[in-house]
Image (tube, rainbow, N blue to C red; front, side, top):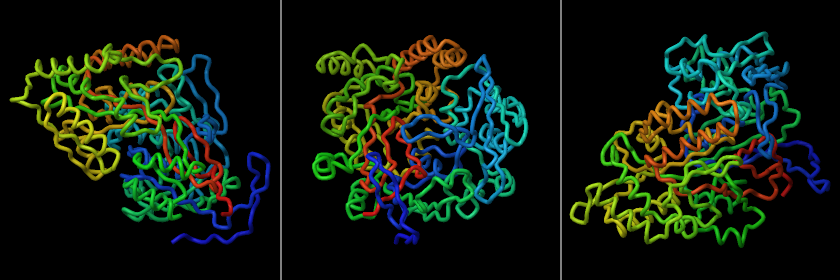
Length: 528
């Protein structure tokens, strides 16, 4: 049941400058996919969890509705001439949801915690540009050596080991959010339970109903609360996209996490004002566990499976909502030249001929077929893609494939442990608009490298790119790294994403952006 918020009707000026009345009930119900794994910003991984954390917490920088990087807790900053020292000037009215002042020391505590091996963050590698971060996260240096310093209560200095053009964008990631030191020191991971959580964003949590929803309410201690309108926001668990669509049509949801692609044509025809499709910085892929047989030390088999997949069928007939077939790992990013294998331009018949040749050379045949599993988390679309790919492998190579559907948390656990996975559904959404956010995933030390990919040459090129001052040369080095990885074929890129969701026309403040990040604090609900 929705809560009724009684207040005087307010007026908002829309883009055409016509007065529109706000709804009395400023409540938003967002479809948000699977159950979140945690609300600890330093240990969270999933995109749907990040949506909640973006409302609960705020970093030094945030994003405008169009994705532009703007000041967050830091009202301004200075950058040294060599690009390696960032001095952030924090807002004096920044506070935690319990009223405590938010200080530079809180950020020092939080960044050290995020880098601390004891936190067990799979995202600690994102702190890599900070001085000594790699050594600290590896346990080779103490936390105090991390290049962050509180000059005074409202001045934070972050020292980088090399100029990093994307650093301000990186600061919007949850791994760099502040956490409440007193709560964490006293309660440990229990500090992130709904009843204990102290946050600093536009909203605070009041309820986490497992397998149902997370309820946030407006945080009146937030520095910019005067410009926040939505009073309550429900993040609804909507793992089944077909059920989510039904709930949206019934008026139970104000926007959806996605759409069932089988209904895309109907949605375009019947809900054109609600339907939003936009380019999205993400790649859908199949991961291959290269740490174990049958894929360990077997590039020919890995490439044979990739060659046998018809990506055009997937994007046009299975998806059909603007996705682009992917033969490279990094999606289109201005200034970066995507790397593709030579066979990407071959006719379909030539690809299949090469796939069969490599399959045979890898030791498989009709009498001795490859037997593997594809694992995916619960989703109608993931199942459809897996079914189509299994059929292609059977038809063109004779592979015998078993499909394994798993609840999201179990799926993620198995991927990380790498004990039972062979082929798994994967997706990587960029954490910032730079190719390095994709490149770093495959570093051998990255906590999210579920493939078990370990290439000294690839790692060395990433290190070289991180130390390169010239932006053009830096991109060229990363292009070389991607080429090396594609030759090794530890994964099978399938398509580049578009964001697809339904949003009620009465929700204003929505704007498409490449990151698909949408802060509730920018939203308003009109009378309807």
